[in-house]
Image (cartoon, rainbow, N blue to C red; front, side, top):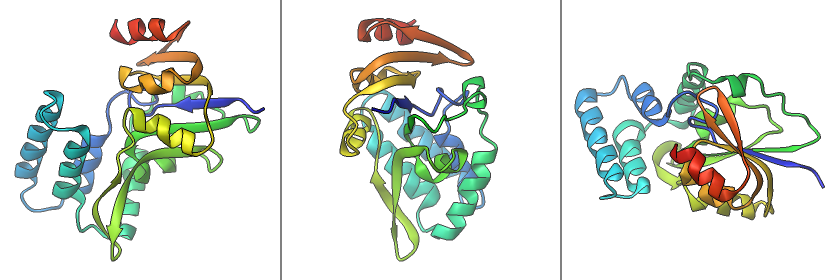
Length: 202
């Protein structure tokens, strides 16, 4: 059976979160951009305080910055944004041996994550929904337990090696034989799920 290797994306293969940058990059030519940024920052704060869900925060960002954008135009913007993401050493060292099955499972949108990987790497992320060729909202928020659900829907019940930076990927860690915690350019192997909890907390 082929080895299954799974990567988170934000702060696992990048130096920082990428969603804020994506929204502001794609929405930079829109009217009232400063106001929209302030409203979204408010939504992020409410989410951090658990007063609204992560899904609602993300839907707010899509409504403010992406709604109505034509699919072809957004595809070009997404590819351009992907090229400016600060990718870390782990990403730069990836070779993606064709003898293994690789998955990038991320809460970020597939639109800008997918261009960063070869076609044989399966990118599973949050997805936008479109109506009549334009962005209408969020079709899927691939976050926390939903990451594990998305993998299981593809017939993956066990992960041989998981790379992540966050306790939000606990559901993936519970599926993994080996877990590597990434911080910047450093990678630390954890011996158990409890060890993983301690690694991400330290």
